[in-house]
Length: 404
Image 1 (cartoon, rainbow, N blue to C red):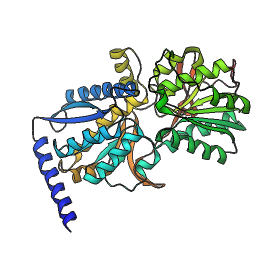
Image 2: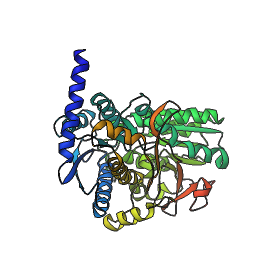
Image 3: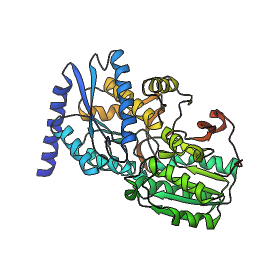
């Protein structure tokens, strides 16, 4: 009973102070992101994209005539630091809605915290399946779970490539492991035999640089792949190791019919820039592309490119669109108390530059957004959408004209 009363008192205080915080002339929201460390490039893409969205929202009146002011705190992709940041946001700053973070590990930690504190949390990029499989009431995810990342790729494999065998390589984070497990399950359902399934330690790659001067040796793992001679090689990796893998695949002369990535590092502009020729014809699943037929997608991509000299990955589109989701929710919410915001989140049904956003309970997921995943291929040094064919910007190249 005492515990219940304490929770009720905490909820009341959060709601009370939230009204006061949002009663100011502007709405101040803090976003936790990895701005230093091995995942900093992802955090920077998202930070830039949030800022573009903030400028656009404020230029059109903000939220109920209040401007949004974003601040960013560096979590360094450390779940303990991320939790500490958000605990302060909720308990000290009384922020009644939380959004942000990049990795599944940090997103998972924040999801548990938000549920405990009864404050809505919008997961923007964390993809591990279990994040929205806990029956949380206050956790909402706009990006598909990792189990759905491969849906477009599996369709491409079944209908176009039709491999008989596959090798699966993955970094051993929650994102990498869940993505690999799902590919194994989907491959087996499709009648594709998994010849190799090998993890590698992500922490050994923390000091990899894009010039690849100081890198761990993945040759033992890739030697197994070469010996197994799979038709396709599937890799779930972040940016630095994605480059490393395709470089070493080329050097070792591994000859598969298809090389595919599970989004993340393989869908980053830096992947093509750093891997150069080794990236050519590599296929990757992705959640978005600057060429995606969503209202505002091209305009956002061009604005980002004009400002920063490169096109954003899907992570940028997620962050950019997330702030518009937050705006829409706050605009519709009966009040800016956490419980009213939660109700408004549940009722979300909107189109964004990232795609349609509607939170649903199905297939074991709670408050989960579901959407089509795309498949891209590096063709002549640029990403082209190749699958599903109704979204294609170019015809896929298969079989490979030159082994990578």
